[in-house]
Length: 231
Image (tube, rainbow, N blue to C red):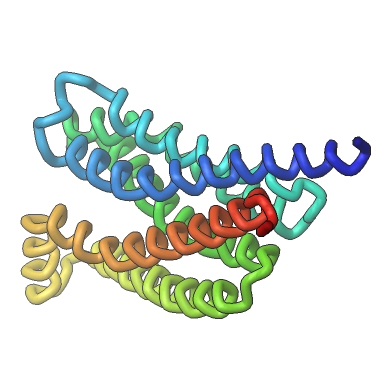
């Protein structure tokens, strides 16, 4: 009986871990699409601030479920907590997408949306680090190798996006900006939605593939442990 209690607790934490991974897997594309739609399109206008808040709250829920797994592992817990803080920041700033669409010339709204975009990039970086920590605790060497590869590619892509975004922010402050820069900024402004989707599509797709792979390994391990022994 004493051995069954830890085993039952482990199964409950694994169940929550799988639910958390599922929430993150579906929450990433949902949050991206709804955030872009709220900021630029009219489809979700009648719902006000609710759609982006709920979409980002799904990501926070997924991380909360992940936090129940291996609470005694300090490095893993810190990685989850950092991602949770960024997810909370995204939830708190989500209403500004709707307010910015209604009043696009308000500087405070513009700043809040910019901070939200930065928080989203940092969230993806921390989520990849969290998944790498999770894979390190699972008994699958192939998964650990694939996780290191996927996260390395994703971190490089996201850091490149941060560098380009920072450079653009600095160049915008030039007075007066060069002609070529004004043309580039005009093009970016006209096609910002499409460019945002294209830029974030690959990092999010790689993160989703990694989440799915980790979830499959966990499910296979659980079914292997609970399967009856052969006769």
